[in-house]
Image 1 (cartoon, rainbow, N blue to C red):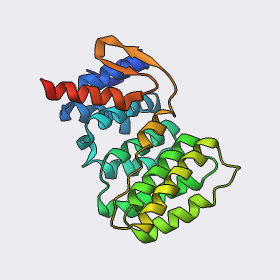
Image 2: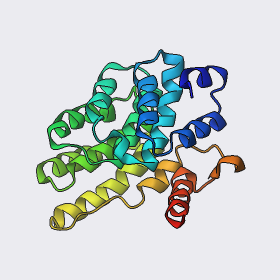
Image 3: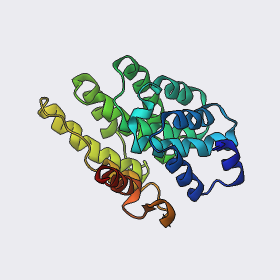
Image 4: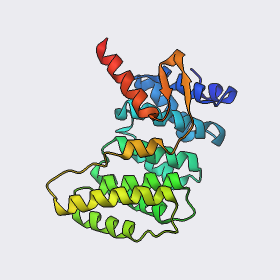
Length: 224
């Protein structure tokens, strides 16, 4: 599949799903899609990164060796769609220790910027939590910042902050436990309220969101 040509003709969700299913678990196909997302012109990149996002949710190993490229893209791009999708997909992988400091710094810049859209700030907050987890100094720093968020913040920011504050306080009080934000996926799916269904590809989105449909697809694959 020529991803640029496919996206030039149609950028609907149906096309994105076709691309995701075409890539499947094929690393070579994903590499082509990733190249389109990272290095193509804006009109292709913004939609290709959307497809990359869902490919990674289905198969996080796709980007385990590409995190430094994603970090560079966050630092250089001004495109909200690109930043949002990269931040979201980084939740599905373990960040290498040598990149954690730089990613933490970049995510913090995005979180505290009132100029950034809510979704970017929420995903940045989640990435900060993922990196800080188990590191007392970072947990305390992030906890202090989140507690400073006042009523002037958007509802989505306040809601995620409250949830992460609770988890951070548990982790600080019980450092041997590994607390994960169990409600992350559910709240994340609420950031995309569109409902769609495409029976030809066996992937559906409703209030349960993408994560649910991808879990179904994983179970189907195991049953073969």
